Image (cartoon, rainbow, N blue to C red; front, side, top):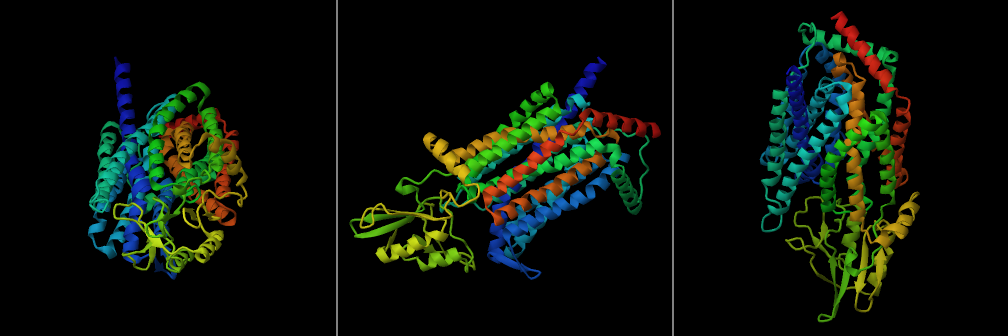
Length: 598
């Protein structure tokens, strides 16, 4: 009877633990990944144009966004180990989880006020609230992860960790689906999203997070601590915590296996997180994907990752956590090589080109249209692309931007409902030759149907289908001729494959990585070590994008992605030197010493 009660209590704890992942993932998917970046850019540009001057430098919306994420993450990363030390000595893990959850979720809800505070204040409010929400999310994550060793013994760790990740992908994916349906279908007469929809998405994400967290607060008990430390003042607590952190770092030899694993984790989690974070930019810039294609891929990742995480639990039961994690890392390398092989199919039909010239027999002239979904013209007034559009506006399907405020002077011509506008142009041999001469530096393409110049085409050197100049372009060029073109797979379906395989690995690799760490962490010092775990994760999150940026600037985007794969390889190699059994034995011995001294 007592065993049944204990089992029921344990199941309830695990359900409560998973409920937190279900709730907070709404912020990670709907807000951070899908909606907020573009919305913040709109609020910023509405107030400042393309950029604003800060401390003598020009800052764009994406630079401000990145800075907000980085500051919030670094603040938590620096504080986490010290907070963990205190939480291991007092029964306050759930208290900290509750406080930081309220900070994060309420800040997310308050994001909804941004458009109602005035143009000059709205973007600042959005940035501050987003930064606060990230502090709450990352800070709560330290104490949430620290609860894992208290959910069950090491034999149950894989199942609990992966079940929590699966819950997160499902919970975040369901609300994201609702938000995307709202963004798609709740529009005004001009086809624009209703003004209240985005603020509603922000507020509902925060409410979703806070609401499901109540289950965690109710169902997960505070881990018991023998003879917990007496309350101390802020200064005394800080000194004690920093002293313990220093002692831990000085005693690395004692936890050698755990720290070797943390180095491996630093490498491979950096590679994995960088691939997922940069895949959207890679898809749009390199492969020429549309935003709707990226959104579809995000949803697929969410709903594939959930069952795959459970599948990796079964694999870990059969092979062991370490071998299952190594297998996932090897698979990640294949996924990245696959991403390098993706390439848009060569343009064949007239309507596949960005700029389409069609002969109008009735008016004896050419009409030009921009392909629906073609990337817009660069916004900066002094940008070469904007100058190109202005210079050739007589033969391009462009229109003056009515909302010009220091950004776009002209843009592709579309009707209010988003369909391309036909623009009569004076295309002749001279103007066509001049346009063709600009293709060496262009990312657009053109095609002519009918009339004097029938079947003429032009392809910009920077167009996604143009391959051959990059260091690794032989990979996608070969794959396109041998695989993608014979199968007729467009780049959207190629990228969809990446979403399926990446999603299948994402939940399992993250869950197993956390589980393996949790097995080798002393229960009596779980918050402290998960503070280091969080610190390594946050610092690693900065390295991958930096490597990608440098490799892309020095070479190209495919070299950048390949460089990130080397991080995963390095992590997998270091992981081979991790003796999990030794790590578990050291953790148990540390627990026994701490409980004996208590």
